[in-house]
Image (cartoon, rainbow, N blue to C red; front, side, top):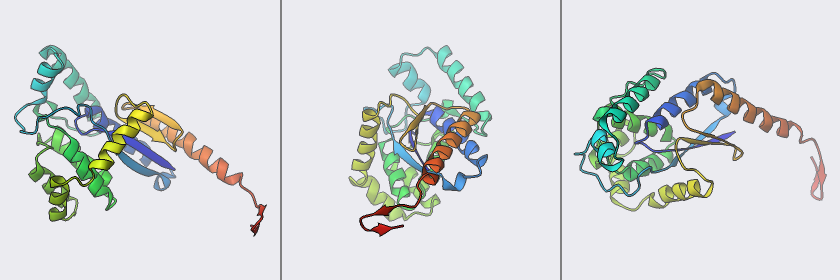
Length: 229
C-alpha cells in the first residue's frame, strides 16, 4: 500500500499533519506494509528571500496583508494543535526563505531511504530552531545529521541535481488538482487534504488497505496462453 504526501517545509499544518499521520500508522497492525513517498510542493515558489533576515510575522504582514492580531491568533491556534502531537512550535521565530533547496535535499535523502527523517529535521529546523532552510550550510548540517555525505549534499545544492524531480512533483500536484497542503494520496485512489485528525487517518488507511487485500484475495489460480498457475 502506497501513500504519497505533498508538503512544504514552511507549512505548519504539514508538520502537524505528518505527526497525526504517523500517530495513525502506529495504531495499525499493517503499518510496515505502508510505503510513504514524500512529494515537493511550494506555497510561495516566487519567494526570492534567502537572506534569513525576514521573520514569518513580517512576511505575513507585508505579503499577505494580515494584521498582527490575526497573525497572533493564527499562531496560537497552530501552537495549540502542535502540542497535541508533541510539537513545540516557536513559529514567531520562523525565518522566511524559499524552500526549493530544502526540497532538493529531501529528494537527495530519499535516495538513501531517509526522506521522512529529512522532512522531520527540516520542519524542526524551520519551526522550532528558527533556522534559514535556504542556507546551504544549514542544509548540509542536516544532511550530515542524516548520515549523508556532506560533499555530495553540497554538490546537490550548488547544481541542478534534483531540480527536475522537485518541479515534476509540483507539476503533478497541479495536474491532480492540489491547491493546498498537506495533501495525501492513498493508493492512487483516495485523497485527504489538510492536517486531518488521527482517527480519520486510521479509518482512511484501514479502508484503503482492506480494499487492496480484497482485490488480492480475489485473484485465484488461472491459465493463460503461457500455462497455468
